[in-house]
Each structure stands twice: as C-alpha cells, then as structure tokens.
Image (cartoon, rainbow, N blue to C red; front, side, top):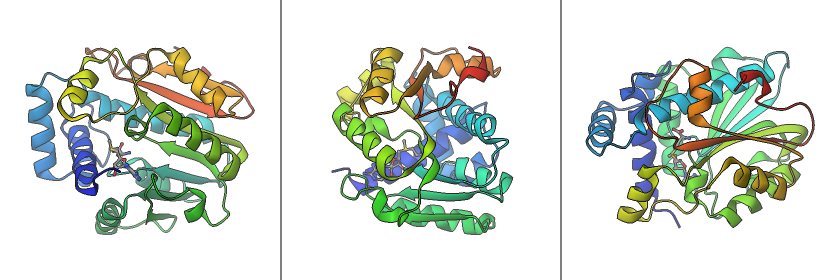
Length: 266
Ligand SMILES: C[S@@+](CC[C@H](N)C(=O)[O-])C[C@H]1O[C@@H](n2cnc3c(N)ncnc32)[C@H](O)[C@@H]1O
C-alpha cells in the first residue's frame, strides 16, 4: 500500500517541477508551493534527471488532447484519477462550464487540492473526493455516472502491469460511456531516471519497453482503439522540444471512433 505522506510529497514535487519548468503551464504556480518549486527544481537539476520539463509538457499534451477531442462536444464528465495538484481539471472546468470535472486522489491529497481550488475560486462544475485506488473501485465514488473521459496522469507507474490492465478493464466496463476515452501515461523503461528512482526507492512498479507493449496492454483491457506515442514526440509537435531522453509514453484508449492522436501529426 502506498504511504499517504509519500504520495502527498510526490504530488507536491510534481506540481513543483511543473511550476519550476521553463514550460510552466497556466496556474502551475498557484497549485505548487514555493518550497516544492524550489526543491523540485533543485533536486531534478542536480540529479540530472531530465524529467522537470516533462511534467509540464505532459500536462500541456494532455490538455491539448482534451481540447482536440472534445472541442465540438457539449457536456460530458471528466474524471481525473490521482489528480494531485495538477492544473488540468481546474482549467478544463473553467474553459468548459458545460462539462463536469471530478478529481479523485487519496483523501489527504484531495482535501488539500480542494483548499487550493477554493482559494482560487472554485468553478461550480468542479469537485473532488477521496479515493484509494488500491482499496476502492472507481465505480464506488461515481454513483452510477459514466465518464466521457478518464484521465490518470502520472499514476500508473505506481501500479504493476497486471494491476493496470485489471483497472483499465473494470473502468471501461463500469465507469466509461460507450464512446468514452481513457488518457494516461506509462513509464518508458529506457528512461535513465526511472532506473535511478527504482534503485534508490523502489518507487515504480511498472515500466514499458515500447509503445507496442502499451498498445497490447490497452487491447488486453478491451479497448478496440489504442494509440501510444512517446511524450517527447508529442511535445516536439507542439513546439516544446525536450533535450532529454523520452521518459513517458502517452496512451489513449477508446472503444470506437477515429484514431485519438491522429490530428497531432507525429
Ligand atoms: C506523480 S503524482 C501525479 C499527480 C497529478 N496527476 C499530476 O500530474 O500532477 C501521482 C498521484 O497519484 C496519487 N496516488 C498514488 N496512489 C494512489 C492510490 N492508491 N489512490 C489514489 N491516488 C493515488 C498520488 O496521491 C499522487 O497525487
């Protein structure tokens, strides 16, 4: 079981890294703490882990995918699982008052996120709730509602491949609309930072050798359409070149429809 204090620290440092990055996204500073910005910036630079910019690029790539995929669709529920101090849900709730945003994380993290959003001015269509993914099914907090999009940003590296496949399959059957999308990232096994973090702390439970391995995972979970691209390639297509090795694969699964990332042109 994940230690809630450690989870909180990782969530803070992810937000801090996003805020310290040269590609800082809108509201990144508001969701990070000054200490997390300083610590994440220093640690990641000193450790020469080229992940700092990838937190910010990942958030922009995810946000851009939402905009591209859902621009012409009214309504719809977006559920951000393990949302931490990401800006994604808040920005989406502000940009799309016709949609509902539901953010979930461990209770300690969820409560702090609520306080930060309240301080900024909570959008009426935004809410958060505590959920421990290891102990509770996602359906237990959705009360029968089905999402148009499920997002899990920076969450699956803490779960094994079998655990990810099991959750993706269950979410697809119980929590997504028939034409719903799931959007998440997985750790690239070739990324040197992941080896370092594992050696020191045993932090990550899954890493993937190739996009094909991630596509196979989505198919195993019952998604008929699966697209997986390296984060660096998606970032570069948006004009955010990252000089480091690729750290993450961005994955989109859906049960019907066109190729999710086709429009990005990479
Ligand atoms: C690397 S952080 C990413 C946070 C956020 N999505 C972002 O991109 O800034 C991982 C998040 O997963 C959450 N998490 C880890 N294990 C969890 C669990 N068992 N249940 C719910 N959330 C969990 C952590 O609390 C943390 O917020």
